Length: 239
Length: 231
Image (cartoon, rainbow over all chains, first blue to last red; front, side):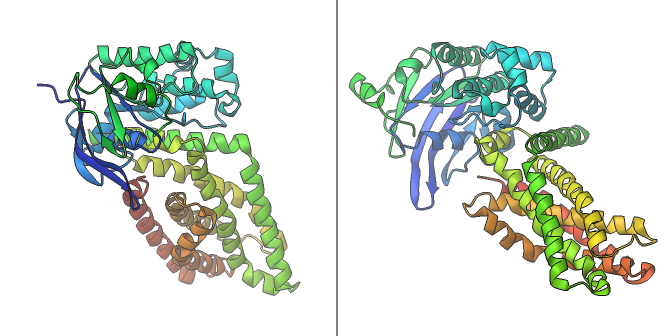
C-alpha cells in the first residue's frame, strides 16, 4: 500500500509565545489535491512551511510519502516543490539565469534552450526571459518564472501558497494544469488559498483552518465547508 | 554513492558561488563601497599614527588586518541579504541535498570578494605605510591567504546567524569579532615576523597556528551550518 502524500498527526507550531498551529491532523492521498482555506493569520502558510520542512513542528509528527518531516527531511525536500507568496528570485539575474541556478541546485539538465522553452511554456517571451533582469519584471511575470521553476522540478508533492496571486486567467489555468499534471503522475497537491472559486475545479477536498486548528474533518466528502462559509472565506486574505 | 554525493555537493556549491558572484559583478556597488571604506581606513589610521615612517611600518601589519576585517565584514551581510530580498532563502533551503554545500558556495564567493578587495587595498597600504615586499613574499602570500580564509569562514558562518535579526549590521560584528581574535593575532604576528625578515622562527610558528585555526573553524562551520541555517 502506497504511503499517503501527506500525513500530519496533531502538528503544532509556535512562534515565540504565539501558537500558529494548534494540533493539525490531516491526510492527503497520492493523486489527491486538498485546498486549505482560512483568514489572515489562521496558520495556512505555516502549515505549508511545516510540510516543506522549512519549519519544524513544535509538537506532533508528520510525513510526506512516508518520509518523516524531521528525521528524513532531506527525502521530504527531494519530493516537494513550493510555490510561495514571494517568487524567490534573484533580482540581478535574468529569468533564464534564475532558472539555470534552480536547475543546477536540483541536478537537472540546464541547457539554455530547454530553460527558455520552460519559461515560454509559462507565457514569458524569450527576449524578456533572457534579456531582462528579474527586478524589471512585473509581479505576474515574476510569478511565472517561479512557476517555470516548479515545472522544471516536477515534484511529487506540490505545495502552493496563494498560487493565483498576480495571475491573469491564463496564469490561473497554468497553475491548475500543473496541479492536474502532478496528480496524473501519482503526485499530490496541498494548496492554501482564499480564492476558492479558482481552485474548486482542481481540488478534491476543501478544509478550513481557523486559529491554527483544522475545522473541517479531513475525510473525503465531509471536508468542504458550507457554501455560505466558503463565500465568507473568499473575501479573506492570506494566512 | 559517497562519490556521487560529493560530486553533487560540489556542483551545488559552485552554483551558489556562481550566483553570488554574478550578482556582485552586476551590482558592483558593494565592492566599490568596501574598497573605498578600506582605503579611507588606511588613510585615517595613517593620519592617527603620524608621519614617522618607522612607526607606520611597525603598525602596518595590524592596521592592514584590521582594515580587511572591518571592511570585509560589510560583504558578509550582503551575501545573505540577497537571499532575503525576495524570499529566495526558502527556495534555497528547499533544494535537496546537504545544506553544507550552500555554505561552501557562499564561502567561495566571499573569499573571491575579500581577496579581490585585498588586491585593491594592499598596494595602497604598501605606499602609505612604506612597506616593501620581503624576500619571503610567497610566505607572506600564504599568510594572507590563510588569514583571509579563517576570517571569511567565520564571517560567512556568523552572517547567516545575524541575517535572522533586524539589526544584523550591528549583530554580525558583535558575534564575529570576538571569535576572530585568534585568527587576527596569528595573522598579524606572522605578517610582522615576515616583514621583519624573521622567517624560520616566529613566522613559521604563527603560520602553523593559523593553519590549525583555519581547519578547526572550517570543519566546525561546515558541520554546524545546516543547523544554524534552519528557519
